[in-house]
Amino acid sequence: MHAVFTDVIGHELQLSYLSQVLERDSLAHAYVFSGPRGVGKTAIAERLAAALLNTSVKGLGLHPDFMRIGRPLEETEGGRKRDIPTESVKELCGRLSLAALHGTKVAIIDDADGMNVFGQNALLKTLEEPSGKAIVILVTEDVDALLPTIRSRAVPLAFPRVSTPVLEKGLIDRGISSFIARESAVRSLGRPGVGLMLTEEGKLEALKEEEAKIRAFLAAPLYEKISLSGMIAKNAGADEREKWLEDIAFALQSEISEDPGSRARALSALLETREYLSQNVNTTLALEHIALSL
Image (cartoon, rainbow, N blue to C red; front, top):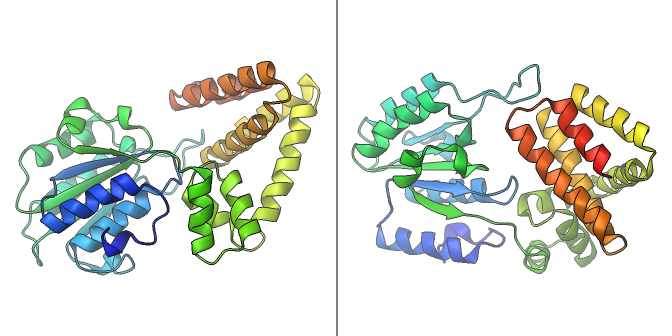
């Protein structure tokens, strides 16, 4: 395996493939890295870019042949993150058309599903007629949001959740105590990025406090569940809502052996809710759907 990937937890098959193409200098012009948030796909994209540009991950931001775009940090009033501006995509494509200073140009597009159809079509022209040695890495949670024409011109690499034993070992190898590594691995739901975050001082304790609140929510009367769901829909941002849904999922999975039928139905409703939110359905109605299923 290429040395640049040695600190990555999990995804051995994907890293083996990337190491081989790096060794052979046989990379495609574009890749789509897909998978859940926190699973490690962005970290791997950064390491691939660093290897291609013969620099460190920290040095990417200063490298003249490295480019990166993504969603703006601010969110809309409804809590949904803004799309990647089409002008940002066009500017990126313009820079990719210029000659590289050191042989290779590399671009990472974070949250690539945030490009609208105009932005994707602008990028498509660059993927169809690449100029020089330019490599584009699209990172996304929702690969189906990309146009089929974009997907057909890029090599797909899916990064699924990592098994708990692999994640736990990866944390221990980083010097984390076995107890914290185990707790963090279990609670991260297969996402190394989340697992690493939970090993930070105080994060695991804070998570346990949140879990207690979630269990109180699950045990509350229906009217309280609906009321709290409405408050979260109105006041929480998109990331905060996503974390709330993940906390509920973890609690339901922990209790599924005690009440398989109802907990399985609730998990199904949770998945439906996430799908509704991705389709821009009314946020309050979507979150109340979970409350009614519990």
